Image 1 (cartoon, protein in one colour):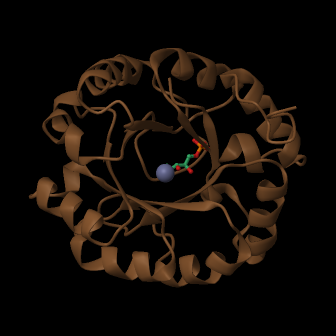
Image 2: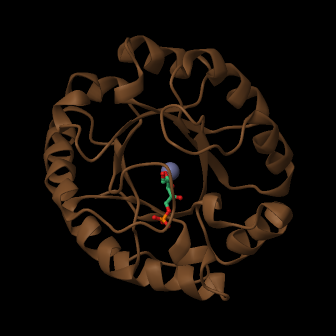
Length: 228
Ligand code: DX5
Ligand code: ZN
């Protein structure tokens, strides 16, 4: 089983002090910064573009994970990579030629992922498992933070994990939406290793404590204890 990692989503941060919020979660033990990119078309909300990623790049050493909830990602992948993205996911529902888009991401030398909405079957990613670094299973309908976890997606996690164990064991499975200590625990049991959490982290005045709570729920060893 891949080691669990915690990825605070900056969607729930305060955009007027984004750099400080990212520094706080890095100091609090986060592994990855999850960046939600929304175009007002694929999802009914608008957020940020490559410029924010460029400005965050010097602020943190953590992996920048860009979740592109946009209709035509191919044209923007290069801009996000230039800005400093380390991981990029695109939605299966948005890409007419998903295999091509995945290879566009890989050609830029960053980790490539495909995200699937709650109503999209696991089969949408299975033909691509060997090509992917990660699959992002959405556990809410994308667009907003603070929604409730949809437990029915867990069977897809199990299905993808079992198939990946045969065909691409290093494939990471990320889950996004409604993650807190309780839902992270069941997601871990199903085979998730990368846990996105927006409101559960930034909704707590003590973000380090919120991250520790998630780490404990998924059996992660905080850095300061690893190797001790
Ligand atoms: C939703 C976004 C999520 C969001 C999760 O469309 O993809 O990353 O920030 O927020 P919480 O953890 O509050 O559900
Ligand atoms: Zn997201």
